[in-house]
Image 1 (cartoon, rainbow, N blue to C red):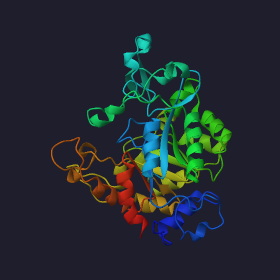
Image 2 (cartoon, rainbow, N blue to C red):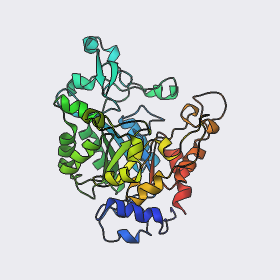
Image 3 (cartoon, one colour):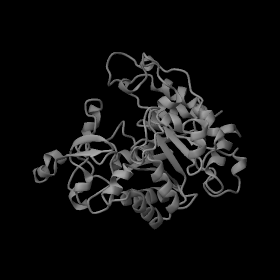
Length: 378
């Protein structure tokens, strides 16, 4: 049996940040959450989010990836949502499905290949918004980065692109089977872009959550977006805990760019910026470099004050993403010369978890959980 966490700073902060009835962090020592709702002791601190499932081992955003992450013990499973032409929500990291499906092998869709500008970036390929759900279901998912994860290509073609409705049904089935609720981390992708196309994401997400009874403050899901305006809109529709995703310090949310708001992530992680976010969200999901920068040689540097400042603002932190392969690791944690071989990811996990973050995204939930166990027992 897992040793239960004793009362501590992060436990109390997690409870406070998510508010009455939505305190989802901490173990038996979470006295401040007592009586606040059924979610009170469901999730540990720090929690581990299966990034696009267990995408280090299976093609991302497939039921193979989701199921493996859950079976490995991931506390929360992530979905990225984009729409089809006929308004269905499907799980893809991007609306450009060129690299994640076998669409290029379908001659009947050759004419759908096009060039678009999405959030200022010009892309050429095939896009979900140009396919009906029925058409999309004729495709099969495949590994996005086969050069790095050649072993994942074994599973190319095994699964379709899942719909959000199918994921919600799956979570309900798995919850009944396991006798506990299955937690999801749900992201709206490019919401401003899709709203301009008449395919607003927030209303569709809220409708699906309401149909499954997952729209309440103590429902087993987080809602996340890189666009603060999307989080605000979601907050008007449902009561779930909300997380504002943040890129690197130089990045600017796309909705800020569209609105002429000059603020960057560097502005949003100041005490003033964090206080602003806390007015409509319960957490932030920053890029790892916002928590611990890398120096000019690519080595881990000195942690910033963002964890302390976010906690002071009443926010929890779920940064992203630690992966096992050398190519994704700081240079001082790489091992050998093969960029696709595993490096000292355990050391990286422990470095970030040691900053006091409340959770972490990983493509490798099993490795992340091994590292997190050390911190959960303190």
